[in-house]
Image (tube, rainbow, N blue to C red; front, side, top):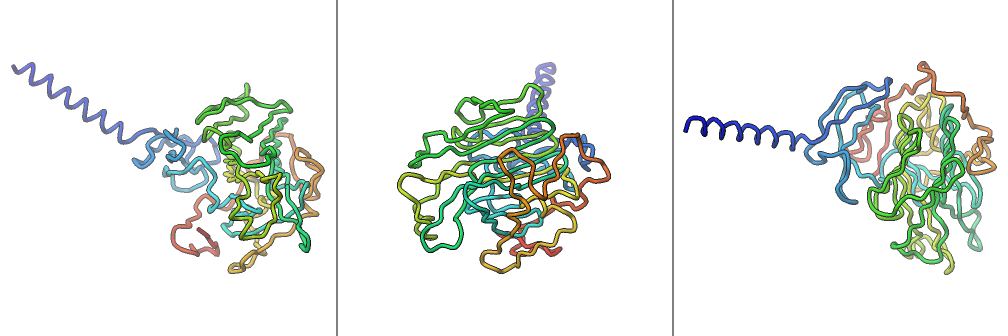
Length: 338
């Protein structure tokens, strides 16, 4: 009887330990030596105990490697158009400084969004100009990435009408089009592990990861009839203007990073966009125009395939600590917008 009682107590103890492990979930760390969280393992919160989402709507465990405090957070794998690093709508950006601005560019042209010594991200703009308008309405249709000696592109293919059951996401690596199985959490990894892609819904959404460099969430969407009505875009009947919603997360940008979005991550950047203005517009078309999606020939381009950043040129300002939960302003001259 005593042996049975001891075995029962042992089983209860095992179940208790297992339950604690289940509550704690996964652990996560940062592998960049420049991160304060380098190889410091942190338990995921109970709200998002796993690094892998169980559904397209669930959030995953995430560790911001730029924060001084190593604390795991919950985030969606799809673009969040209300947080720093976002580029959505026509197109509306939120800079690394947390300030909202618009960059109109020009239809059927390419502009550098980010240009650093080890990373170049260009965007192709599509758009239209209705009669009586002084400028184009534009949207981001494709992104072109250059890093090390590699190239990668992601684009929304043209469609007459929007059908959520049709995948319009097209991806290419080093000039070869990728075939990634449709379906949530389908993945692709380059043979040298230089870049990876994971679908975040059955179709039209993905996360692109360049380890220790950048994470890019993309989502293909159309210009909706409601948006067309509100803004009077005058969208034609033969094109739904499928485009990309994008959110960037960067790890270790240099202090000299350039580009329409990239310059807002410079530690001494002063944003000319005035807080409170309905549509603050950022210029720079001439400085950041490139001749193609995968070229680095803009006047402000800095990309070099020579190798990684120098340690002394690493990003000084801690953009990972932005707090946009306390209303319209969260101190330090940073303006947040929900």
